[in-house]
Image (cartoon, rainbow, N blue to C red; front, side, top):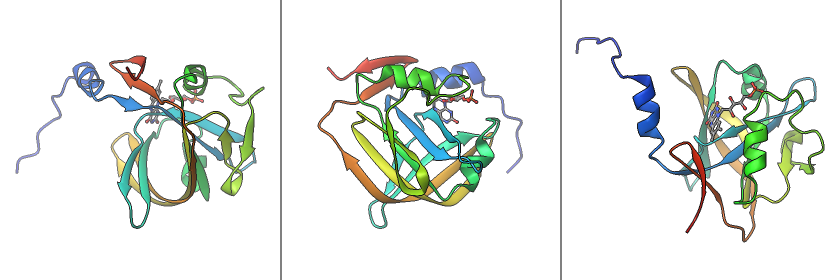
Length: 162
Ligand SMILES: Cc1cc2nc3c(=O)[nH]c(=O)nc-3n(C[C@H](O)[C@H](O)[C@H](O)COP(=O)(O)O)c2cc1C
């Protein structure tokens, strides 16, 4: 097969991807120096039931990317419909995204956020290069859930289930 230069228009690509409605998660961990770190992520998905595996992808350009790659455990906090403020906070460039926030410590010290509709605690095992992102495929060691409706993201906007 001949190698072709990628001619996909990236703005149109992002717009088309936005038609895939997703939930919203905040992925959290402890940096090597003990600081809590986290970011808003909608690339989360399920992979396998036995063993229990999930995936998400992390932009390699982010300043704390190496801390996620090197941590033992991280947590995936699935946001409930009333947690849009957390999605915005963890997608921002705030110096301390955890300031004033209620959370407990999960495996490896990863912050577990209050009020979520599900939380998955994962062992950081396998990572694959994925272009400008790194794809994490990890085993879930612990999880919990609550009877709360999820926050939904579609076409660049936050939504609630009808
Ligand atoms: C709805 C939404 C989904 C996002 N999903 C991802 C994702 O899956 N992977 C990723 O690396 N960044 C994702 N981001 C961007 C990061 O949250 C953002 O770049 C990061 O929080 C910036 O952190 P920093 O300023 O501390 O570097 C998403 C942002 C939003 C608003």
